[in-house]
Amino acid sequence: MVSSFKSACFIYPDDGNSSRYDRMFPPLGLELVAASVRDSIPSRSMIDLRFDKKWEQLLPEDTDLVALSFLWDMPLPSVFKMVRSIKKLRPGVTVVCGGRFAEVNSEALVTAPDEERVDVVFSGPDDGRFKIFVENGTPDHITGVSFIRDGEYRVTPMEPYGQIPDEPLPDRSLRRGRYGMIRRDGLDLGIATDAIQSSRGCPFRCAFCTFNKDSQGREIAYTARSPESIADELEQIDAPFVTFVDDLAFHRPDRMDKLCNILLERNIKKTYAIETRISMGMRPEIVEKMSRVGFRYITFGIESMHDHVLDFLNKGFHRHQIEKLFARINHVPMYFIANFIIGSIGESREEMLQIPEFARKIGLDSIMVHPLRSFGPEPLTEKVLATPGYYIDPKSKRVYSDELSVKEILNLARQIKRNFWTPKQKLKSAIKFQRLFKPNIPDIAWRMVLWKLQGEPDPWGEAVRGKNKHLDS
View 1 (cartoon, one colour):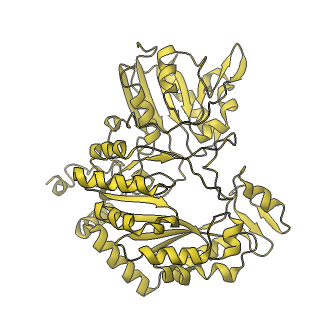
View 2 (cartoon, rainbow, N blue to C red):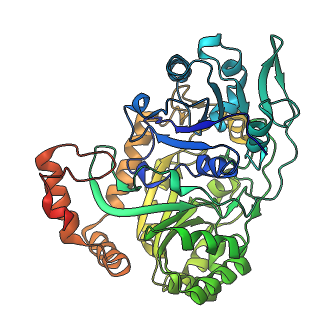
């Protein structure tokens, strides 16, 4: 079908507060949306503001449609400033956006003054709706969108969440450079990375989690792509290190088992990182097969080893289960990391400080420690505010109490990590990391020296030609 637009530019903003290595992760959501209109719009381009600071110079002159993705919180004035710039550069352009932050602020975005107004806000996953908009040129009769019509703010209701589709696959051809282990300060470790989404949603109801519901409080049911489609996408990825961005990559063990069989049959060799729950330990035979096909970096959401805290967080398991399940898989050649949350109601300072010993006991190679935060509208907010002596910091959303301030909890998190990383643990984890990932230490060291000597390099990780001719060889 003929498109109502001739040139679309997909822009991924920089929120400025993501992880230090956020340049590991491409804008998969935008790439999926762009792929859906591959045959509908004659010209498509993509700009990633994490790299493209002078983005105005990259916006094609014939652009008549701009799609923005706002997954994370941003100051609304910054969004309006960006939209003003786009509309000033390309008069008459249509601006649409999606993502969690856009959903929450949809009314403010589409009712703003004309010069900074977003024309349409899409809620929830795309699943083909953007293509319908592109071909019809109007949001009318499209579900889950917000817009202005005849001076009135209108919202069309979302349909129930459906199955995550196997197709289209993200359009990686629009990337202007490579993603990899590139720090925000410009240090490029020379390791190319990519990401894949093989499922969405979560069937569990952890008290602190906001990702199993959308901005309107509706549950996002767990659905998964077929193993065949995942393997098809992995075959197209050039990067040697791939992160599964799913919340629960191992939730259906038989599906993971089938995926491993396909990867073995097709001889697809990469290194994979996933996030999952401790239930992975219930199928050690599949975990061993996963290690054979390249699953190496495994992150678990343990959160605590104390039963009363696990109950408060509604994790659905207890300490004895953690110990039992880790004992079944800690022999597998994988690098195990776990998230711990501190500052829960009823958790004492002494209980928090027991994390390092417990983590080493069950065989973890690394830990991440996070102060409890309550963003709402998850059930946690109500629990915290109903408990005398507990509060939520309005700015950071961190939970604190009369006994432990926000600053004290942050200091405890740092102390827990210091206590975990004993000289023996550092040596043990370093040896295992080297054995599993085989990083090119001389190359990484050389890149760090160059970075120190020449200052911040090109943000895409490209060497400055002429200065660093040795990198061309």
